[in-house]
Length: 573
Image (cartoon, rainbow, N blue to C red; front, side):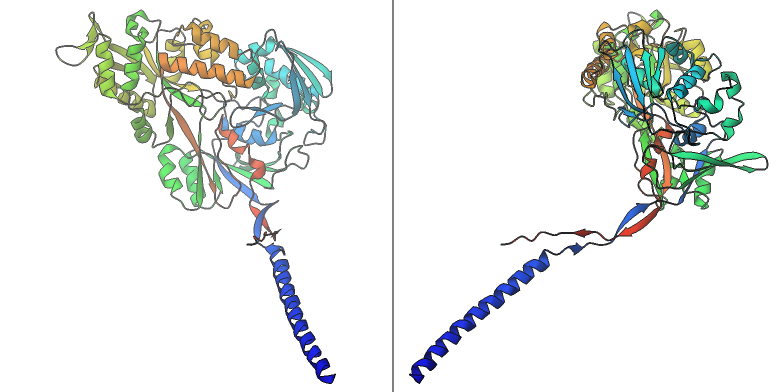
């Protein structure tokens, strides 16, 4: 019995040891699994924190800090963008976004716009922003003493404005006009501080030296040296209704030229440069501590043809115009005359906007094709081989251009390109004022090298420059008389659906590229520099230089360390 009991005990213990071993192994596996499921400590990540001072070398000089008076002073507009707000703002692709206007609606017939102001919008002195401020600002804008153009004032004279209540306004238009939102981007002024002033008194008001706005930054003080204003200091506004910026203070210092602004950066006086011109691009952007941000400017350089001038009737032949385009080495002009600071253009609309059609036909530099097209059109070289003629009419004309070094170089390059395909161009330099007053407006020119300035034109509407109705007294200086293109432009002005408008503008661009009533050359590039210590900066297409501050709320100089915990999942076999 004892032997049998001992044997049974031995068998039992052997089984228990195996069970214990299994339990131990199971516990080890479970422990490993639990450990792999524990939060893993990632590297410490820097996060933006409030504080810091950003100092920028602003190319230009102080004028008046007032959004109704800064139209001709980019340096003032840069600062005003941070102090003041507008009803509507536009993003980098030209899509309208709320600002002081919380929302807006349009009646089905497209003639009435109802705008609702933000309930939390206040002036930097704590006074609420109301409809009365908007009406007051528009009354100043409409005045004959306003700095706004005659066309803008005339447009506002046709708009009936109705105050519904403190936060609601109704704009009634005489006819549908979808680009109307583009006219709501002016900075709003505080009525309670300026109501006693007329438009002509506004320009000399002390308000322009110590403004009060409703934007992300408020005016702090001016810096003055030897009786001259040398800078402006702004501090972040604690009353701003939008995202409050991280950078606590912005200091602007004025410099007469971009060269001096760059020198100030290299001397450690500033962290940013408002503009890096093409001649400084290489030296500035070779600095390892300076980040250069380049964006397309809202401008288009073109060669205009006077299609209504019978002295150069050959311009009316689209095959001649297309041959002239093929004979232009536009990329060489951008690379060598602009030091690469430009984008070759194929459309009269700005790229990277919602209305731009990237599939438009591109005509590259091809002098052999240009010569073949001119021959096909009946133009043959004269015996001396200098110019092509047809029916005793020579391909010879005069091109006027702005009298400055860059346009002189461009004009000479164009002249040489076209001489190589048998087209004679006589150059005539004129002042900017004379170019428009004496040549474009009276339509007395033959060809003209011009810059089409689309600054602050957020809506892409090209109607004023290319519609038939603008041929006689408008801005259709080429006198392009194309019914199909005009119909596309007409419809795009009255259809609110952005997708339909984009299709209409695509069709217009296709017609334009096929007909080439003018030759697009390039879109210039605007470059500014910011020290690498300033983080969160992003380059976006510009409608004016001040747009570089559209993302100011994301800029930061100071960071805090945050220990993030993230669960790393285990993949079992």
